[in-house]
Length: 127
Image 1 (tube, rainbow, N blue to C red):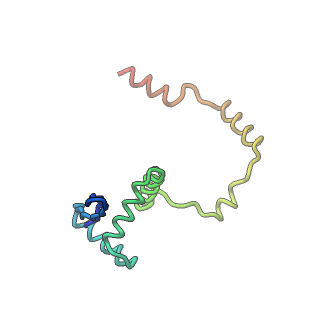
Image 2 (cartoon, rainbow, N blue to C red):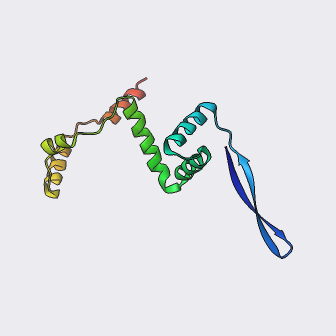
Image 3 (cartoon, one colour):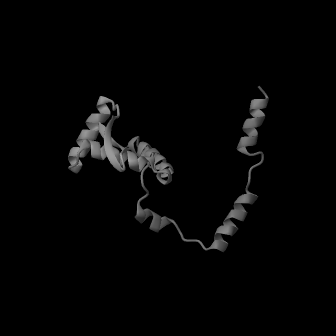
């Protein structure tokens, strides 16, 4: 895949913009997927690759992209699926802030001591 790099060259009093191609090595299997996707979208593989790279390299999107990849991997393996909105409506009751605070307070009173992390630390220390 080739992408043009711009370079400004001074020619006397005039600046000239020269485009120099650069090469990116892409494994054959990835290139095949890229070609298929580009064909589906009706675009050139080089343009699609540049667009995807720009999207992935935007600093604000990096966290979102990693999260999306993790979710997709879990869904692909059948370990995660979206909750049916009808079930949410049927079983999830909206709570006011005071109700949520009361529930949190009740849960704190039910706290098990020692905590699981404390039990693990004690267990590791006994070895």
